[in-house]
Image (cartoon, rainbow, N blue to C red; front, top):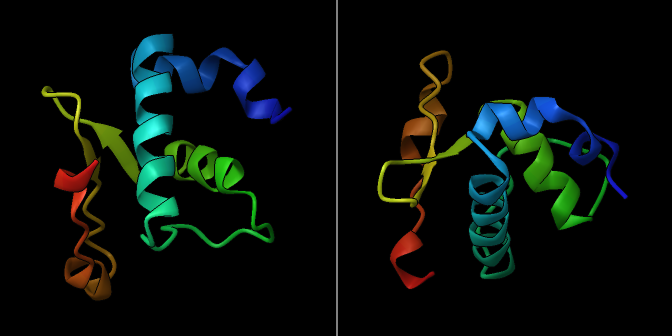
Length: 88
């Protein structure tokens, strides 16, 4: 099991267990559909990738429970990332 999921930090960061579950599920669907990971990790385990994206504040749920990618003002290339979450 992924150790970060045992800690309350990730639950509190997202806003609760149900939101965490929703965010993980929706992001896994996007990754399985061909979306590129937003973090660099030495694994092909998509669950670990999603957990790292959450811990590194790369993704979050908006008020409508849709996955949003956090804007990174330090990287000009992040503005060119385009994901279609409507198909989720």
